[in-house]
Length: 319
Image: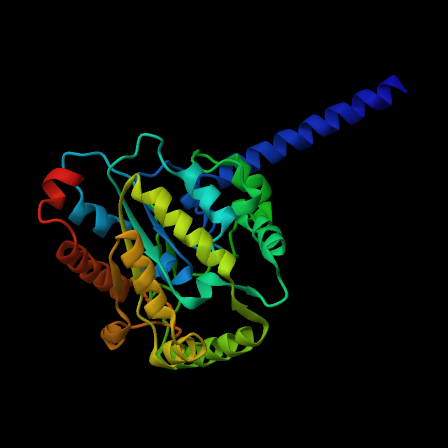
């Protein structure tokens, strides 16, 4: 019996050792599209859903708006699971460097960021968000982040040897930006691809509108998020560009959205930068998300708008 138990213990130790080794190797990356968002403390954040995840470039913002002699970590902390709410707010608290006083915070807004299934009350919204990556994680700032790898990595650990779960057109940046490139060594995203994906995306949004609705709870936590971040730096609300069919659908369903954002911005004394009238200037690959060149151009234009809205001495005195 003792011999059997000893063998079991040895087997378990070997198994755990193999598991730990594979996690460590996986952490050297690339892991997946969200891992790098959870590997450092942040002085500035880009928040919102997947449009911001792929369409706003942290390095352009920090290089353009932060004093060159200051160490500053700008992180794209947006993803397709990060609806405004209690869980996102708590995650932001954990993500921010405690010493942050002169931060830069870009809050991307669109109607989808404030929705949940129609039948959900406030408690069900919280339970829903707790099942996302933000709700599962306890560690938000470590590298390697074994908490993320053990509880939030959705693919097989065999990807350590040959990762087939990553989309070829994704480039994962250390600051959390997920760049989408049209051309890779193996494939090119064609105009036909983009047209087809845009049609699928529009169909998806139409189906989603039948089952989800605006939730006051999400809007209330959005306002709380603004309040938290205003104490730590400059806050900017941004509505990003998208294809006119997508924007028409959003505006048809929530025709008061821009007025509501303007009202919140005025009440909280923060700028609301609305780019939807300039949407034709930027290109998406699926009607909703900007690809590489357009993301860089949009972020550069965002810098210009921020400078126009900010204090004249922003670079010298505030950052």
